[in-house]
Image: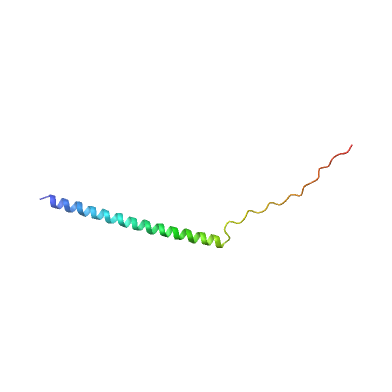
Length: 71
């Protein structure tokens, strides 16, 4: 007599768990697609702004002559 309601409870719980897992996977896939799209947009914007600019050239120092003392 108590077996039928127990089986129904277990079956319902299993279905609910499967549904939540499925929805969780769908949400994760949607989030990953969104993050990938956002990353591509950020990279495109960054490249349009010039990307990594080359480092500034060092100012060439003018070599100075050493004075040699003549004795």
